[in-house]
Length: 361
Ligand code: SAH
Image (tube, rainbow, N blue to C red; front, top):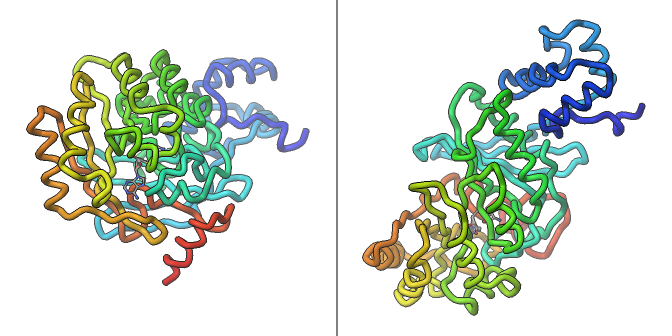
C-alpha cells in the first residue's frame, strides 16, 4: 500500500474513523481512544498510545497516517501576539496567529492558502487563491498552536480570520468545525468559534441550516453597493441588500448578534455620512459593529484614518443605538494583524512582489 492510499486520522470525523477501523477488522470504540490521544493529549505518535495493544498499534501504523503541519517559524510581537508559519505536506505554507488576552485566548486560523476574494485592502487577497486547506490542515493548526503554547488543557476561542475565505472552502471548513466539536476531541463549543466571511450568499444560506453553528461575522466594510463593490469585489455578485436579508433570517441563539466588520479607510468609507448610512442599513438586524482601523501595508493603496475620525464614526453609530467596538490592532510589528498574512515563495502575484520588496527594506 502506498503512503498516499493510507487514510489520515486527522482528516476523519469520528464516525468515519469508526467505519474505517471496523472495515480493517478493529473495534469501533478505538476511534474514541485515538481521538483522545490526538486531540486531548496532543500525542501524534501511535507508538505512544499506550492503551492500545502493541499489535493494534503496529497494525494501525501500517494502515493509517497522521499528517501534522510543521512549524517553520514562530514570531512574537511586543504585545504578546504570536505568529506561526506552518508548512503543509505539499510544501505550501500558511500562517496562524495566537492573540492572548482579548480577554480570551484566541487562535486565528486559516482556511485557504491565499484567497480568491481580492479585497482591495487585504494582503492575503493579493496572493490569489493557491488552494483550499483540508479539514485536517485547518484542525492541524489548532493542534500545533495548542501544543506549542502548552494550551491543550486551556480554554481558547477560534476565529476563522486567518488566510482565506471560509465559506469558499465550505465542506472542509464545516468538517473541521465538527472535528473540533467532538466530545472526545477538543470538545470545543461552536460558541467559541467565529466564522468571518465576505458573505457568499448561497453558502451563507447553507450555513444557516447547519447543526453546528459558529458565531457569524460579516465583512461589510461599506454601506452602499457602489462603495462595497470597489472594496470587496464579490459584492458585484452578491449585493449588500441580499446579504443583510440573509443575516436577518439567520437563526441566532438568544442574546447573540451578528458581528459586522468594517475596515476604516481614510476618506473612503469613514465619513459621517457613511456612518449614518451604515446605521440605517443595520437597523433591525441583531448586530454589533466591529470597526477595524486599516492595518496599512506597502502595496495597499489606502490609509488608516485619524483617531479623531475613528472616534467620530463610532460615536455616530453608538448614538443611533448600535453596539460598536473598535478592534485593537495586535501584532502589527510582526505583520500578524488583520489583512497582513501573506507568505512568500508561493504563487507570486504583482501585489505580493510589491509587498515582498517593501518588507525586505
Ligand atoms: N475572508 C474572511 C476572513 C478574512 S480576515 C473575511 O473576509 O471575513 C478577517 C478580517 O480582516 C476581515 O474583516 C478582513 O476584511 C479584515 N482585513 C483584511 N485586510 C485588512 C487590513 N489591511 N486592515 C484591517 N483589516 C483587514
